Length: 327
Length: 259
Image 1 (cartoon, rainbow over the protein chains, first blue to last red):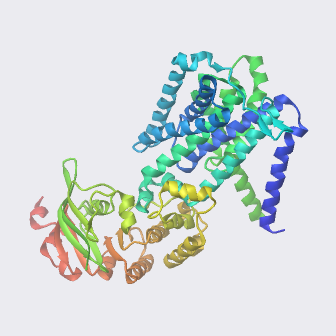
Image 2: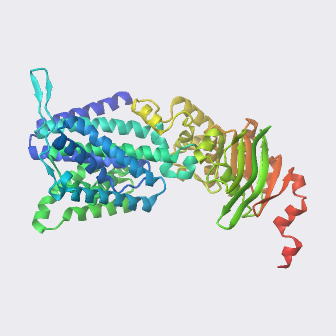
């Protein structure tokens, strides 16, 4: 079989498995976990574009997630805008804030940029906490409508109150987003981002307009995080300032680092793995009455950075090439 | 024919005048050596010409257009490429990707143009045309067999050559080389000289900073000498080395010797 055909077969099998999964495992709780994992796949992958490919250490990514969620939630509850439009409005609003955060990033790098982005995200969290008329503060916005049903003629209506239909909707969103990430990162645009990450002065010397590329990547990354947020709002139907918390960013960061920073598959692996792991830890938490999850995340992060910089994907690749060398 | 000219070019760093009122010209097709003792302002001059920072005063004219205030990427898009004294290759990219990154045609398209192309499924990095060009350049500098290697794994001498290939991939008319021979052993030096000559033969004008006497005497048609930021001499190599001011700058004059 040609490598091309084999690649196609691999994709087709993977796709079929993802489509069949909820039909085989009909447990609602399991489906809910899959949806949560899918949201984190979007968040981690979009963060990865910024941090892993372009080398811009944004520690305020949850802010984009929160902006997307609040935008769509407010549009739906206050103005009756359909969630289908809200989904993209959430993405676009986050993109706008991404562009805004990109401006200070033009002058800052490394730890200075990281600290600025933390400040940005904390300011927005405080706004969400205190602008009670708009956001209902720490109570959160509730009563957010789910995605309105899709009617195909008179005979088929798909509604989005159940986990299973939400799963399929998210599957479409995630697959489309991943296809875009794949194209972006393997394109001339992606190569430009990587050159920026490696050496800004070197990149400028070969004609890369550093400022323009930074703004572009901040905007794109924020758009996808906002999209994830808007989806979350209509799935969970409750948005609270917790979505914008630093803990959320830290979770996204750990997933990406564990899976493999600067790789396409890494954030996916990390997001799925940690979503299920943290659910498993819930039982332990109930027993010991302690936030075990964050402790485990911290330890995983340290171990990853010390012993496997490339994350799980990096480890896998080096094992595979070692295996090949032996053959 | 004049390709580049500076008028009263000056750059201060705080109170220190690193480049002081320097006028010079480069003609199309020349190889010009830029020499001077450590701290003479040579690298600062190249940084000014390549747009890393703007001059404090004075002008840079390239192809009859003033470029003094342009950013580095704009200067590059007009046809000036450079290498660095301390190499700035993209360490975590392969040798081939280093060159491909430079071969992207950014004169026509900004980031959003490239994003649109990528999403539409075009503009895959290293399209056939770029790839051929990159292979040709790697062949030219003798790095073909390393193309899949990460740049950080290259020995120093080869990473210097990679920088040259990367600079050439942007199709420059003027190439600024900042000490391309530092850290090379004598046998590597000859290879390097040959490469620089061949680049020049293809019509690229070259301004080269160099400390290695053999290289500078071998290849430059003309020398410019900087000392404490000022141009103190200019002319054919053999003449310049007999110039008493140059000798004094390098060896210390009688007055300096007493201290």
